[in-house]
Length: 216
Image 1 (cartoon, rainbow, N blue to C red):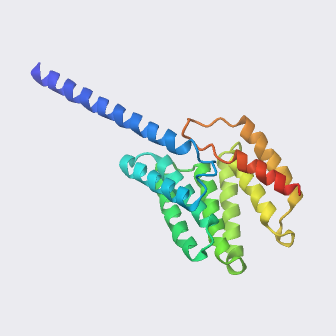
Image 2 (image 1 turned 180 degrees about the horizontal axis):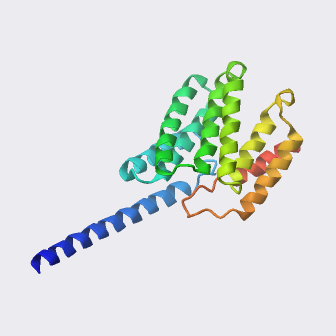
């Protein structure tokens, strides 16, 4: 009887600890994902702080794919927005390593494929003349994979539209096609329901800005 009571007590203690850890993880993630689209996040300091925080959460949890995913997203945004292109590949490497960890925990994930497309785009920006074909094709392939995995993911269409908008016409770009793709993305955003309050939900505001740019 004593042995049974001891086992019950240990199981209850472990369950309580797990619940507390889960609640702590949830609270931390809600706080960090609430302002992903804000201007304050998209500064060099804001992106660095976010990427560091998500990596700390990921290292503490180890079994959750979202912290690795968000750390990678912040790192690739750093790579894409900074002016010093000598740092781009190193940031892309960090993002890719975190995406590999996220992918191991959540394989065949449309959201992860979307961020992989951004990693390829970041590498392309280092030297578009020599890297354009390789990484342009890789970025496009990742978006096609993301669409196949989840045709309702609005970020797929946002990123495809962005590519059409910023690619010169002689290489397949088109403002009119970009406009149509952004409009589709906004339709998808309107219908999209994230799996939870910490699941990926970024991009709608940026899509609206890109739509305006496509109409000029």
